[in-house]
Image (cartoon, rainbow, N blue to C red; front, side):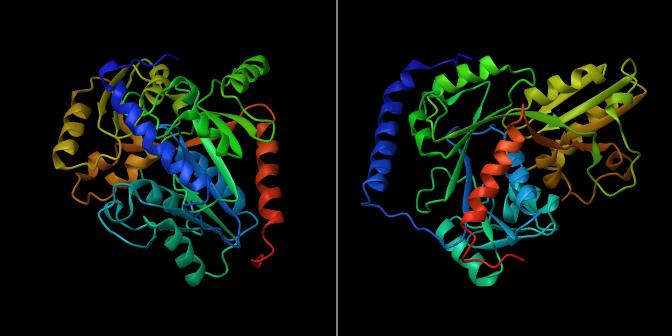
Length: 363
């Protein structure tokens, strides 16, 4: 898909690209050093600003490895108001930890989730405090070259391929797209479920995937809504919705809300979308807007829907009217591999971890 360009920004993009090229050259030549660790370290990241589906893929990887190993997830905690190393719990504040790490910690109560801007110090601290850890997942760390991950996974949105984008600020890339060659695995996210083998082959050529790189395709899967608050709300099954007499207020603070809105359209006659910036911290004014929109819906059956990431920020409000609380639901999102990609991806992960687990005790 072609992206709109604002050409006066192109000279600034060249400067930014030069800076990132020099930085990568310093690491590639060994002038700047990358730290390695004795346990498996897997990096999940992108070179695009926002919206590639990184958190669902991190959650997939964490859930997969948690079946056999003691897993830790390390994030920088984007948007948090704290500094230094901090371990995330389900009852932590999003302002302290960042919303995405809190979302992961809420989903996996038995997995260690930590935040630290200095990733090297973060991994060291994890291993000091939790020596039983078998594998560390670095969330959003493809550009963080101070650590050399044993396995690097790069995500690119099918609707916004990195090969068709440009470096900031002319485009949305953090570095030139050909640096995807550093990745061991490339995943094309948000792919149509109907993607054919021929189309996959064309995308392989478009992305210049090397023979030694794994290429996989995932689509976005939505589950039935769950209550945002622990308030004994009645369960909702979208497949059973009365499509002609239901309405929804969609509240989002994510980078790419359009796919979710399109997904909901067949199920609701009325949709009022309140869109906020990515990682937006809601306030009382935002809740008031949500309540007013909810009241304005004419349908007899109505609710307020949000995302998993937004839900962890909304839960921190304790003074919401009890009846309004019952109207708040979120839609769980997961990544589904196309074709036989799940078996191939799972094998890639377990082969890497299994071969590099020697220095860490398996529980």
